[in-house]
Image (tube, rainbow, N blue to C red; front, top):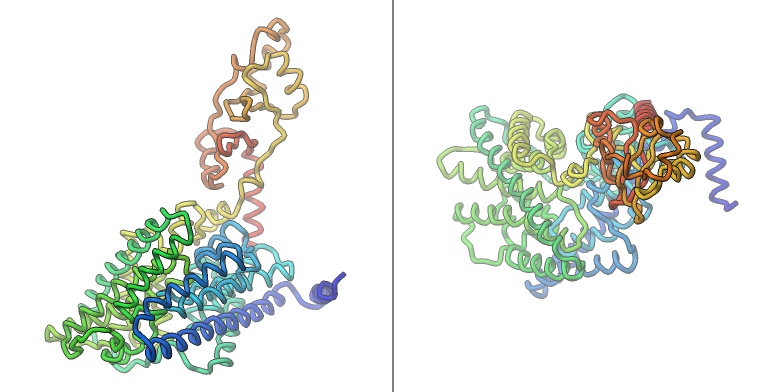
Length: 591
């Protein structure tokens, strides 16, 4: 036995002797938080290093046209790494993590522990207009899952540690441990009971301490609240909320449209070329779209519009408020396009920061318009709350939006407008877009985790684990005598699937239907299966969700239903086995 396995075995034996299951989960949550924090630090530092080298040195010292060239180089590097080194699809961080929780019991492949650490910095550092939060979550979740697998934790604990890693990644990225816990609960629908709350707290704190250790108290958004909330500004915040709602719908619709457009191209290289050129053109014309865009956000928060728009390659009068507003709106509109094109072209990144970026530009622009009309509102506060509105709408995460913005900026005095804008923006967007970008594909496939525990249990069950194959198939041409001899006499089941030569399902024969004539030998040679076969009350398709299977049993009132995959017979699912599996999974999830 290799030395590392001996060490692990000894650790597990020692743990069973001296540490309870709950205490060990607490220890693992601290470890997972540390690893998620470390992974997030590496991700951020690598990205900022590339950005500083390329944008801060080459572009400014050599030629402005490099804004067009660098994104294509970055996407080509990512394409090469995925094709020749990783040789697997990386996927979008939060969406793939949600899928792993709902359909894979929290099992995430090992390569995802490092895949995003390499590809996301190359995408964003070279100018891809995406964020790092998604890759940070993907890396952290993979670390959490593999730590759980290493120590042979059960499915429930494994999924909890994935949630802990997610909270850790969020906490380390923004140094906002409270918002990180809310994010894990709101996005991943974790059960906020005491048993799960303590590990989430430990992981979040462990990650933020790790962040403090490496970068000190430096935060992504260097802003402290100066202008207090004014009650008379409430009507203007309501106006802002509706505009952020409209922008959230636009953001989501644009994402779906561009993704659908690129899906028509089968070749990843063709997607890279088309997407890379499109991104290059957008960055050349609108340089603030480069990378994540923290510079623009921080400058707008600090009322320094001139610095925020300094890279715009046009001779615009920054003293002309309407020209500034026009440029901010252009930046906001094209951020959604640039971000989605980055993903569609093969880049690796997240949507979290782009929503904040778009919200900051929109909020600042609306504040400037209001002030030009003769009123007086805080442009920095509107910038801040615009970020909240976009997050609440696009991500469908109003609580995360409220607490994140309040925590990272010290803006707790703005809780009333934060809550107001988040609630209106979320409700407005939800009316038009039922699922967020993270969850829309999972929802279509019926694989979306929610706070409905019964539905979650059904979603975590797999059809292939329920199929029974000990049924004797028969053919329509088979005589009654052949059927009795070859199938009925050798079967312990009272149902027989009727198949053609290509194993396609045609119908069923029930033992109850043929029992009256089983001893009438005159029928053995003259009657064939086709004379008494009948249609199944319902057919289960292999890609049906277990929830849909349960519904088919309810509607058909049957005890056994056939399963078909690509028109071929696979087996049967019995109601009794389905209910037993459901009860066992419910016990596993709730204990």
